Image: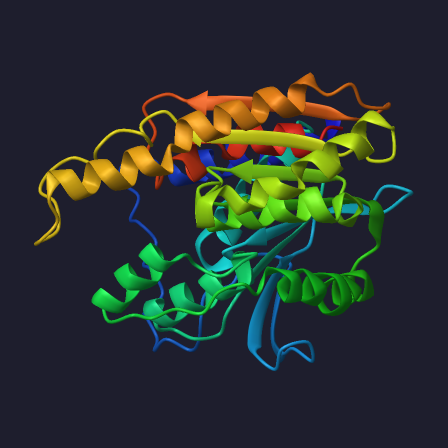
Amino acid sequence: MRAFLPFVAAALTLSSAAALPAGAAPVAAPAAGPATGPATTLKSLQWDFTSAVNGRAYRAQVALPVAPPPAAGYPVLYVTDGSGFFGAFNDVVRVRTMGAEVAPAVVVGISYPEDDMMVQMTRRTLDLTPVDADADMKALAAKAGKPGEYAGADDFLKIIQTEIKPRIAAVAKTDPARGILYGHSLGGLFALHVLFTHPEAFSTYLVSSPSIWWHGKDVLKDEAAFSKLVSDGKATPRIFVLVGGDEQSLPPQPWPAGVTREALEKGVLGAAMVDNARALAARLSALKGGPGYKVESRIFDGESHMSVPFASLNTLAKFALPQ
């Protein structure tokens, strides 16, 4: 807690300075100047690059810890869908590091340089899906006028392993034995695919609301081989599986134009987000692995598919970054 005391003192100083004596004139705020660029966070880096793996453009956002590295180096948390979750993870990790509640870590958000949200969504469906979409999904995308690209997960993992990880190691002292992968929704599907096929790629897997339903639960075809590795003591990852308790309930009305209750029920019940996540966690927990193998899970009651990533941040930080 001694490391935390300077932050407490600074906060008290700022609080005292904010209380002006009676009759004192407030200090005038500086005149607002023109915007000069995007907002940044403390000790952060960003670079855009074109991957040699697939010829596509990516953006990596990196938050470096304020605290000095441990002897073995910092753990590194790789966050897919970085445009949505990088800032939130960085804030939670950095603040809890101040309180000596979690270990300092490098946080890396992986996303795309395009500003168009639909382009971002199309890019992620390619990178985060291990196999092609099934006929129903393709028909739905075509009906919406947004045909997608799929089955790029293996290339995406190669990009992380061969192009992003070396860049992080070049700007910070990192511990290669403490790599953490986070993914939500299709990102959770990606994390599960990597866990089952390349468990050695990361030491910890944060699997949030995984889209296990994708293409008839195809991702589960590799589970048996992974389970044998665990049982034989050849793979000892730490795994956290989570889902929002409301993910198997219909969303509140009003629904989008043209969307019927029947269609929503078919989609929600077919995806079986809660049932699939619960069953997965139970199977992984039942495995008798070697030292270091650990599985935790949680259903976040009252949280939806869109809210559970933020409701789970503190829980995941504590699990992924123990002191």
